[in-house]
Length: 386
Image 1: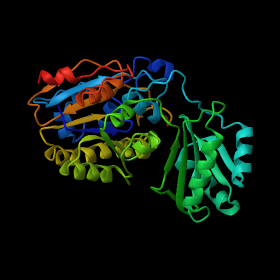
Image 2 (image 1 turned 60 degrees about the horizontal axis):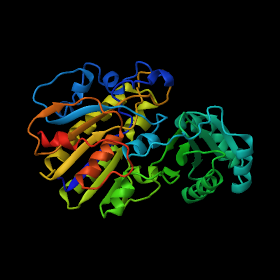
Image 3 (image 1 turned 180 degrees about the vertical axis):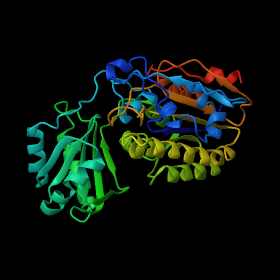
Image 4 (image 1 turned 90 degrees about the vertical axis):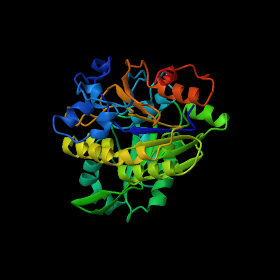
């Protein structure tokens, strides 16, 4: 039905606690509602039904809007995106809230020829502030983790050039591929500056494992190309992706989305806008989070204006990260699904979906591809009622 599908992930913009939030100690979390409060300028998102999903009614909505429940066993980027694409793992990746095993740290030191400092769960900005000077004096790499299954390695670009940091991360990725450690992502975190004024750079690079069979694989097998914008290619380890484009920030991501909308392609454009999560959710910066939502809302009508009648836009999220909630970790939440095409003349609020995988199932259905993965139910029939 639609020649082009634009799938845009607002990283961490959850829409209310998931039914199993109690298991994750996240009862009461609602990233979007708590971020916007009562004073916001989100007129375009309102028209697409986003505020309707948190009980703030508006007239004359356009498109379809609903929430989706998570069925993956985590609350992180990787599992959220995998579930969207129909891949739900039965056993989650391992997390290391107390730091990594000493035997792994020893292996890293031997393989890289550098000492390791840190080895704790920490905020990335905080740990480079605390250990950056020591790193610069000793050349030791800063290793840390979070509530997600990640091993992050931070290094100053003047001490360890970015290409060398990437090689270190590739080495660590090889050390941790097996089931013994089962770490989802190794992340290079270059930074610059001086003690008291360190800044992380946009040269982050993720080293993931190959994902399970998913919608992107089925699209590729059937000659439908996927264009990846932002960190999508890292999340899926470059697998079944035709074009890979990195972004500096949310605005850069929107500019690239708009450029593709103006151009010609057929297939799926899959984009992640990460500033919501990285810059504001984890730092519990509600004001900054709201500003980022309003910036997205500002550029959104330019994207909508360039959509053709045979284009479909899906806006969603991968998890929550309520900036008003305790701690600094992701929150277990449902996600919004906003579906729009210029051919839609009115809005419709649909019932909650039972899994994020309905997004991927809908994309497959649109391109006439059988969902042999077996997870997710297409929302396509709802389009026909418009």
